Length: 87
Image (cartoon, rainbow, N blue to C red; front, side, top):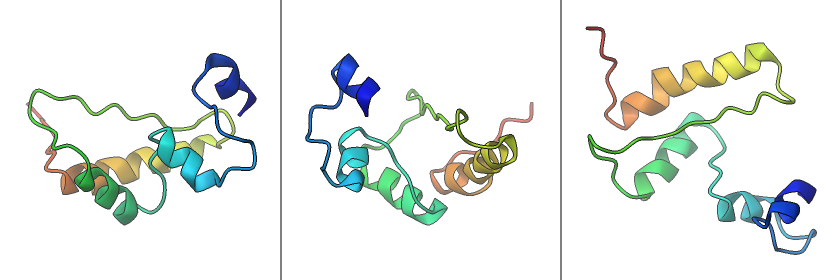
């Protein structure tokens, strides 16, 4: 949180509930089903919108980061209507 305070995106007390901090920063977390639900509650994405995903890799083993990307590709993206373009 020190870095977030330094760049001005974290201004709450250090003892704030961690889940509230993640929510305020717009960080989605949880099971695939929970993330899908959170995304479906937000604004509707259209064909002209971009969804930018970031997987934590600084303290995450590569195998876990790859598995997270696979979960996004196999479960989360299709639930939002995304289909791969194999052309």
